[in-house]
Image (cartoon, rainbow over all chains, first blue to last red; front, side, top):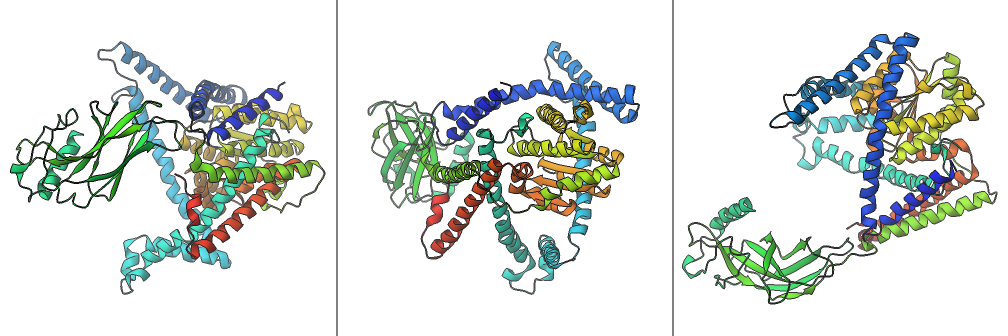
Length: 224
Length: 409
């Protein structure tokens, strides 16, 4: 029964979703909303499993294994600080006149979010620029014909996307300037390749979904 | 609505300088909806072919009002068309929306109808009253009343018939090949380098005595990519358990953590080493995209895994992780169905499962005939699409508009 019930639920829900895509009539038009609500509720409860797992493993590293003590302490400390300010500002806002939310500007929680969390996230995102540069350096080495083609296309697109590209080729008719070359590369060969991949992905999605709905693919349940 | 009307007034002042104001009959802007006073524009605009029909392929509650106008709306000074609705032919007509001038034909969707209830519609061409210094609307001309009309919900979305047919063909092919596989027929499946290398990658970790890191992306269990990733995780964890190599699975979603724990534990049991499984092998880090990327990078740099699997749904964090994995010299196998992230993985990883290859990986790794049969069916679907594309190109080149068949409404 441990296997049969989840498989039956998967089959029923999967079939309903597939059918509902083609039926706009009530109640089929509401299934997606209902299931999304249920998923959100289950996920909201599950977040505590994740948070407790994080705290437990970090505490275990500090007290039992004696490894990564600094990192693990920081995780627990950051977690507790955010939870403290969330609850403190939340309750303060409830009894204040006029009431306010813990996310309103001026609260401790908002300060931490704005000046610590957002800055750290932006820092990580900014690193992407450097990683793109190092990855491009490797990818654009002209080792063979395909890599040389990639290098040439990348060079034309990059140059065509900045004003200096058109400035260098302003002596050519408008349709032959670098920005037009870049547009052609992006709109024709690039789109053709992307569409081929998208068709493959769509077929793979249908095939995988069908395997899951029919119960052929059941490894996600923890078995064969 | 008020701002819109003020803007229309300004536009009309420019457009209607030639209209003699003295001959125009006026009503106040707010009063128009309630009563339509007879008026005489300079050139009456004929509202023709008014029709109201149920909005097709919907869940009900909407009708489409459409009409044409005679040439002359510019000279007639029309700046907008008001659509009015009543419950009976002689009942009180109330404005339900308006459409600015400037088209050959018009339509407006009334999204506020009750299914099965009869409604009557008419359209009024509206000008601005230049004689009234405070502004005001001037009803130019009106259409005949159209009705009764009812809205209703449909039981099949005909605009998706093409997808329905495609799905039936594809599913039919897959089920046919699965049935053939069950009957003992063997299929040739081409080698996919990224999948073939899974065992070698795990073996490398074993030789180097370092852990394997399996990153299942940042989406939850409601994404098919994560489901496919979980299936591959089961196989990778089994090989790792057989080789007595530790596999770590840091995740970004609690539900993925619960599922991954179950899968890895089961894989260790299947490999005959349930005692080797440790509960902290699968651990939750954070739901936050860049927080997760930072944590993964930190783990990579500190623990220097020999093998990294990046399988699932990835976004801007893909290259941050893959480049860090590359910098520590790990052999990396990536797979995703996010087309925008594939170039990053190709540049930074040793092997990349491109889109459909990731979905095929579980079947390929299991070598189970039924699953391989589904891959064969998928290939047939691809062949059908290929033929359809070639035929479509030829027909379109000769002016046969077949592309309309594949447009969604």
